[in-house]
Amino acid sequence: MLSTIAKRQFSSSASTAYKVAVLGAAGGIGQPLSLLMKLNHKVTDLALYDIRLAPGVAADVSHIPTNSTVTGYTPEDNGLEKTLTGADLVIIPAGVPRKPGMTRDDLFNTNASIVRDLAKAVGDYSPSAAVAIISNPVNSTVPIVAEVLKSKGVYNPKKLFGVTTLDVLRASRFLSQVQGTNPASEPVTVVGGHSGVTIVPLLSQSKHKDLPKDTYDALVHRIQFGGDEVVKAKDGAGSATLSMAQAGARFASSVLNGLAGENDVVEPSFVDSPLFKDEGIEFFSSKVTLGPEGVKTIHGLGELSAAEEEMITTAKETLAKNIAKGQEFVKQNP
Ligand code: NAI
Image (cartoon, rainbow, N blue to C red; front, side, top):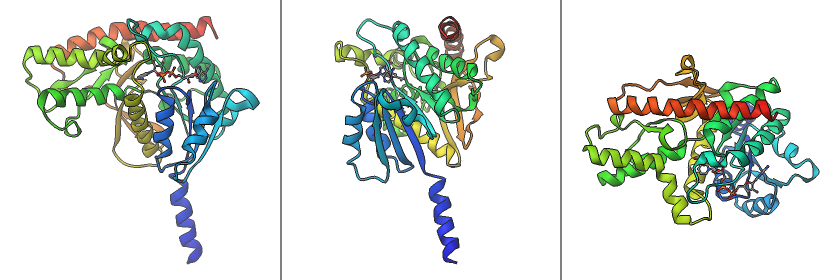
């Protein structure tokens, strides 16, 4: 009898005990994201990596009394290998952020090689982990990771995610501000990609289908370019970090809930998607049901308004270029 109880306890904790690795953990996003992951009770092993300061961040968050060990590594002493080995989920916010006047695409030259090199390490040390990419430009960095993992023969399209959750949070928040409502009860589906015109909020599927045209146009623009508000206000010191950490933690929590076999875990994410593959667009963000193997179901876009159809057409043109740019980068710079 006792042994049955002991077994049950063991199996229930085993199914919700996960190692999470954060690469870029000492950055503006990495630090608060590491804090939030320390507060997640499914995380029993939190491994933080950065080219600088990660042991300090690890020592700091390790004092929070939740049931997980925290380790921090730099490149010395095989730090990346130690961080990644055994990881169930790898979250990557490593890279440079925008300054005023920059688009996310302007970050490509620096961040493409950072993400490529980290993806190589993921392929070597944690090839079966779920991988969540925050580093911009997400529309290109996700294809970069896919190409690297393909070249190592370990690509699993069900386990690679571009994190677009911040667009979803902003859409709820901004819509609720226009309507004077509680953002918690204003879900908005956002699809496409994660930059400017590729961010397509499906407001016709929200509770407010018939917004006046000028309100609608202003709201769509704010959702697409909301990141610029933060870049401008931070005045050269970076882009969204705290709201992004919250978005990243929410997405990571959903991935872990899916891995744990919980039902109806749905988050929009930029994934290897069948939706527009016949048009040559290999990655697209839409609602995804998450499960024990990662992606369980990729949802279609549902019914769209004429304005949304038009935005999707525009988004696809830019996405095709962004995706090809990432793929080409890995071909030219393997
Ligand atoms: P940050 O500059 O504050 O932090 C980046 C961290 O990455 C630094 O600590 C740096 O040392 C580290 N790093 C650089 N190269 C590395 C490497 N090879 N290995 C490990 N760590 C490395 O930047 P912040 O504000 O945290 O932004 C990070 C990225 O997230 C940027 O690319 C930014 O554009 C992106 N971002 C994405 C969003 C999204 O919605 N997906 C939203 C906001 C930002």
